[in-house]
Image (tube, rainbow, N blue to C red; front, side, top):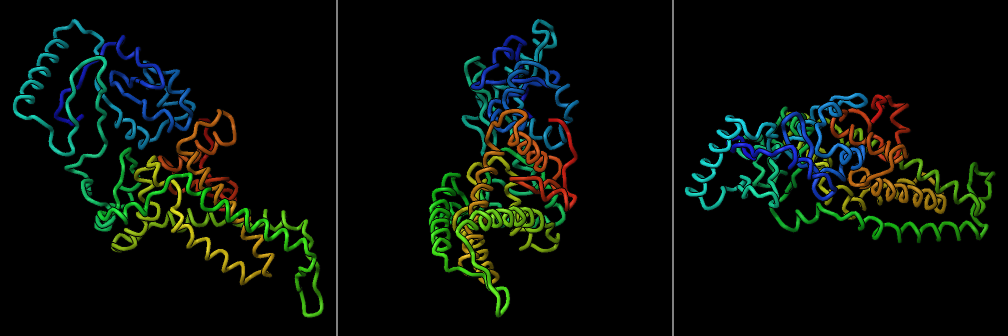
Length: 385
């Protein structure tokens, strides 16, 4: 709903009827929101919203137990659809309706279709879907959303950091070239499809090689120790543990670097690596790494381990790290779109990660675990969600 469009009015009875997972409305004061599309994304689970459907959620937004951030409130505005008419018989309400109807009739005569970027006006029928407004002002935003963003963000300079951490619920197009654009998108299932066969093969290879009983780790020129096949789980878990540390470091020091305001290319690179995910955190096609990009990290990790460790030992550690990466990408996708049971480990992780996106972008860098946030003092303050 554009700023110049008169708001739609709904009675309390109309709002109360929308209380299912297929159509869920809530109130903030007298403002009406259709939050159906947000049910799966809500960090507290869809049940918390559905129990408040058709009701005023102002107290829940303010807390306790959880006071929602400014970004969360800004996000909420994307689902605004109109106003609550508490007194449908009042002269003021009737006057507003008359002005709105006259405006809609005039618009209908002067224009057969809306201009690009404006939401279409729909008939005011109880069975018709209502348009949701976007928090992005296509005419006044810092970038032109009608064009690929990759080449624009570098010009934002010192405004980039604040802009990229104001999330929106709309798709992002990075490149104009269809092939380049397709290369930046990946469905979640491609991660296990591509990498699990690699994990299984190298696990089998590592274990069977150790089982031959010929592997020894040379400590000095005259001293070495045999490596038994039962060491494989130890090497595997060591690789997984090392990956969890890499996961933290990459997320904190690479993905959340603050590019210099004067450096066009570093800003663009940051946006391509991770900035676009913070700008549009629920873009399902960009929640996991494309296999082509991930393979660069995988090959680098394998090469480093081959250099540092004996051949078969490095393979066993490597496959543990690769398995850790697969679990990381799957968990990351689930934290954005899953609905874990309240009180479970995954529920806490989901709430923690959403807080990272909406309020604490300089903390909470752990994805599969919060372990490394503690020694590096980047833990998001405890809060009941």
